Image (cartoon, rainbow, N blue to C red; front, side):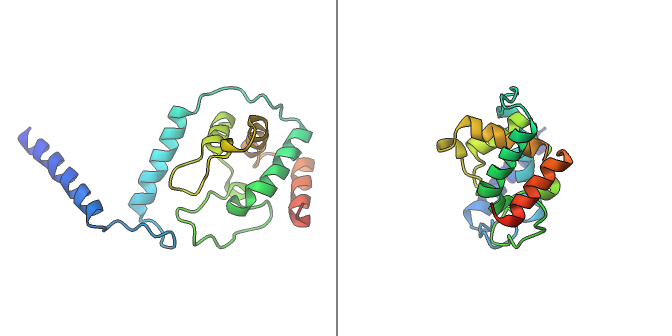
Length: 167
């Protein structure tokens, strides 16, 4: 029992010293270590799941609403998260890199997507859009993002066409 307690104290003091001595890399142009990336991913996903209330999206996922959400995404989110059909872009100056939603989609629920868009994620570059955007607009984007990998073909075509035309 004493050994476990001493080990816990040693780990805590070691962790504090690691941080206090400036050994943790904080530059945005240097990728995080695997351990840091793994711990942060776990912390973010766990926090979002705990704090985002599971409420129904008041925006119906009609084709028109999905297209509207896709256009909002193109105009306001794709600079960091990527546009459909645009492929990879150099985001080496952003660490951790923003999730490439157009390529990988998301495992979050619509309510969780809305919560992240509204409140942001600390120390990631994902700002709190709820400060200046309406809930309706954020829910519209959430409806689109939740279905981004499973959109009706004509909706996906409309968004890809808008992405290529820059509108």
